[in-house]
Length: 343
Ligand SMILES: O=C(O)CCC(=O)C(=O)O
Ligand SMILES: [Fe+2]
Image 1 (tube, rainbow, N blue to C red):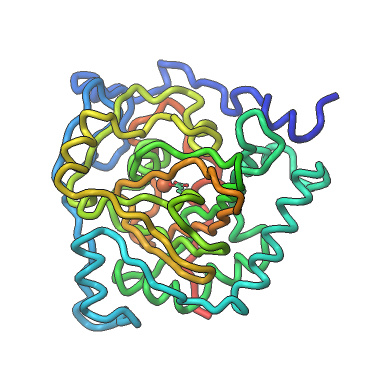
Image 2: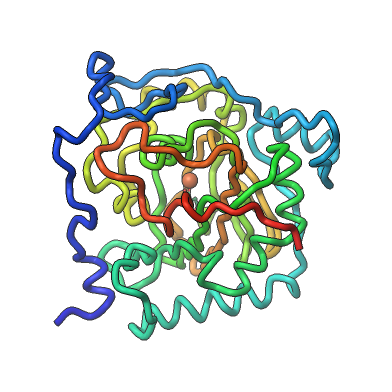
């Protein structure tokens, strides 16, 4: 009998491979085996990587002022130019206290093997490789009360609505624990590749708000962002493996990473910035901004909550380039996409 954590580390392919005959094969000429009913504006996972033009705005047009929000025009311009923005101390340490406490309690109970999780939902939890330490918890905006509240907080939701000029819902949430000594990094990627290829998000009309529950420094593995990288779409190599969706939350390397020869010229011209700050600082980045993070070599944890907001007009259809059905609802919201009322 395995312990819960061992079972998570050992769980086999969770989604059985579907038969080739069930796949849509209308685009075999382009090297892609799978397609959705909607035209694919951003084909990825082919047999070579490409740089494609971005066809979507970064800051969406809000002509009648319906989605006016607290970001100044200077902040909007900076976000549009760089693909990210850092809002120092947006929340006070007091506001963060319940979130820190509850995220810590979840961590402890998972690591002590006392966390109660429904069968079939094991993939909500990712442990660090060969470790009993928690790496990541997805679906935190539903399972952890204070994160649920945070995801509806007007400071975040009104800014997300302002940038996307639309009602928004949470496409994914996760707490990345990135613990002292054991927190492994994540390879260079942008989030659009996986949500487009594996879930069927058609357009770049989404963004992540990362909320710091600890001080983020380069030593603790602060997220590294490439300013300006969101202006083109760098595709990733295919084909998508059957189990890529499991790897996408558990592993450093999975389908969707940016190849070195593609990244080098981008970083040569744009550089790399660390998203640093204290507890309560928030950084927001476009779904197509290239980022990664480093191993946490420090003796301090770097726990952050990641909340990915998507426009309600940009809901998932069918995977654009994956041999498996859409990922489970707890990894990428589809059927339960309901606009958030800011609180
Ligand atoms: O934890 C980080 O700094 C980055 C995590 C990330 O890129 C992701 O979860 O997609
Ligand atoms: Fe990411």
